[in-house]
Length: 313
Image (cartoon, rainbow, N blue to C red):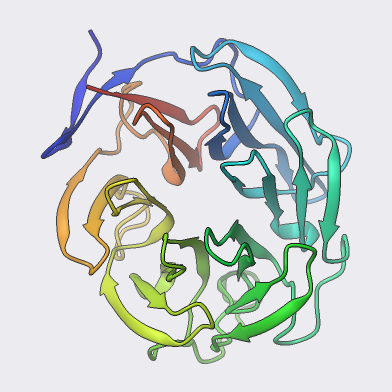
């Protein structure tokens, strides 16, 4: 029997050594389709002068099926799959969103590969793309160097953009460039993930501001709640937000948990921890998905082969 974890009605058993093969790199994110196939967005190489990635596909029991995208991907960030099995992969360092079908066929590219957009325009290191269940429009968080969010038609026509703030984490780290961050309501300091509820309200993981901001369908600010370093969120059928945090706001090495909030921001509870055991987070929880059975998958960065499955009990 695996380690038991969870909070309240959300109880899980860790499925240790779930994947039948070692993930060849960083498991940046994970999502499942209507057939319970599990798609892992993988950064196979992250060196400065050699970056590559692939999407690995497993069955529900962790048996490896196939991989695709390795001839195109540069740095897979978040992956999202619609109820109709439309697969959207955000490649942040290639500045594009790629759409695939479950066979691995590339259907469209939104953005220009290798070319960042103009200021305030899509895309400059985008982080996540999802379809709204009501309108069917595409919402994109954009991202590491843009501090914007965009609403687009499914074929990539821009409808509205919002947000501001020009603090770029990597500019500061590498070049010492330190412009003013966006910290006010409706501004961003690295919009790292995005999700949309059944009423087309938009939730943005404003990671470096340690909060989740909530907007109407056109980017109008509604409210926010505190959340330490949110990377990605998933709203379940009970309207509970599950968000992955790779760190605490003070210490980047010690965080590692899943937070559960009602959609008004009320905290339900927190579970998970960082550590060396196979049921713990050896890296930082970065991507999160819940399948049709209520099982939780977590992709981690900062650690090779960092992929966890927790079966709902």
